[in-house]
Image (cartoon, rainbow, N blue to C red; front, side, top):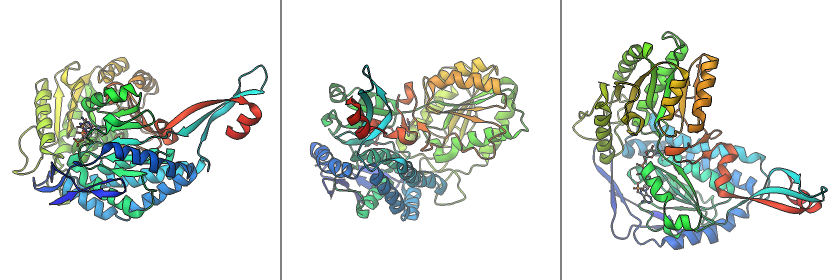
Length: 511
Ligand code: NAP
């Protein structure tokens, strides 16, 4: 069994004291242990602030962009090893592992590309200058400068590679040193990636630190120039947001939490159309990719009453073709959940959904003797306004069909009952219906994805988070926002209004 170390204060640190065991969820075998006992978290923050930060800021934006490109290439060299490790320790199929690992290198490369338009200097002009006085002599210009603290990233277990890389890309490009903490059950992939990053020698000392295990009292020691970006459940997000130290120092906190993502089928879609095929393919993909452990996976499928029998039949037939088992065997198209805790939680969730409807396929029965397997499970709600489906995230290969009238206003009302989501997908070729739904659900969603005949051939699936579009949503989704091209840098930058003589302000700080 491997011992996973943390990388802090310029060296690898073995756990001192209590450790947590990581299990391969495909076989239940113990694969590693980790722990952060013995780490001085205050010193870790200081190392980032006092060593990593100045070194990164000295480089300027354009140079940091080039670093991201090299980092992406360095990790890509280990692609096969990382994919194998993910399959062997995290229960992912090879396709799922690619989604995570290629997502990581792709996002780093995308940010290197976005950085090409940035200056060599260490500030960014924000928009045009503006006349503030009686004449243009008194002038104002907004600028962005990197914060002088540490970016602490607490990540979820479901994307050990991508979650770390997408946060790092934005913080490092902005000029802030990072302290990365992966979700423990799948930390082995993140740990190996951390080794590759450290061994590459690309980042200045102090720019990258890695905690494998609990974050201890790190959050209680953060200060006003630090940033906390968290991805995980709503419960943990709320706990961190309410942390007294973070509140006292007004530390910027970005929360990416869970979401009851809806797919909405419009009544104009015919069952022999390309749009219908796209809808079926995406719902099935979302339910089974990464065993449904995607924050953007569809949980609620709103279907007009006139179409719900067809949809139920077609989805059940499609899901029956998904072979569930050890992902080391490529015939298996869906692996296990990531841990025993996840399995218990998903089974309890299926029971709760089943109490308000009918289980059409799957359920809570054991799929294999060993491992954390659950079958793809489709539930049909007894009516549109059952409560649990609009309130409970079952983080696994589980979705619920919800019958509705087909009216655009009804679709909006039901989609928004999720209380704030990361993404909603809308399938229609009716322009007016689509416009009503998109505008009605946009205040409650960070992203709205529209599937139609026009894009059926090339649309990337709604569950895929792209670096050029924002990720995050209001309400229960956490209220945060990440990515979205250069918008993703904003949490790590201070916007400052510089006011003074135009000859100085415009010439020195203007675009
Ligand atoms: P989680 O239990 O909330 O854990 C998330 C992270 O927080 C882990 O690194 C965990 O560490 C850490 N953590 C837990 N308690 C903490 C505390 N008191 N103080 C500091 N850190 C703490 O969530 P998860 O089970 O890993 O992830 C699944 C959830 O994440 C789902 O609800 C999913 O929807 C959501 N998610 C959201 C997004 C998004 O972008 N919005 C993306 C992926 C997942 P340990 O693992 O060491 O306990």
